[in-house]
Image (cartoon, rainbow, N blue to C red):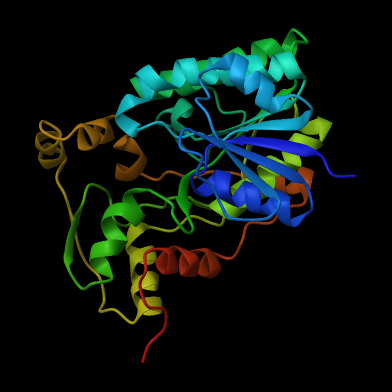
Length: 312
């Protein structure tokens, strides 16, 4: 007998999770403001405001799990996340659905060595504090017995539709042969998580009671530098070797004066100016999920950008 799974958000991870569940024969309801989502006979798309807790409660009644895969505009996290997260938590508490939240590594801040899910949440930036509080609220409700909650954290995404420094700035220019100035150490080790592996981990965590009450890192391939990934992507697309240069920090700072998105990048510059490595071995051991091969996830990323794969 199939179960109902409610997913808030239809970005890359929400879409991947919805398709994964629907392909398994589960009932899937995707909730977004405009009723968007993947086309699939097993997926119901609903237009609703997820910050409206009573509405979300009605949409979640009878569900096995409620997945927070929402993605407020990057420069509006501080204002938009708190009411949204509160409504989703309230819906899970009222309906009894397991709450599974898609998150990131912002809460750790700058650290030496690889990050695990036990790394202390010590970041002080505004966006990081929002993510930290979301988890602390869910964990407090879990420990009080009001909800069953878990969180799946990952690094910058690879995969169709993913949005990161790599997919928004580096690859689109590199694969057309243009020169790219990147606000990063081009040779620093950096973890990249495939959105399909995030989806697999979300679904596993939703249905395994061992996962509840703690965070997990989505299985992630060994780290690769921006230069290495750009070079591999160029080879796949038959493009010239990438022409990359390092953007000085003051240039990024000045760019943020007139662009709110660029301004928000200042807080997380440490993630790209030094090694930024995720340890996901705990999730692989617990759920048996191995990270997808980097070549496959990079292939999908380039295809998602609408660029040709392979050489003539």
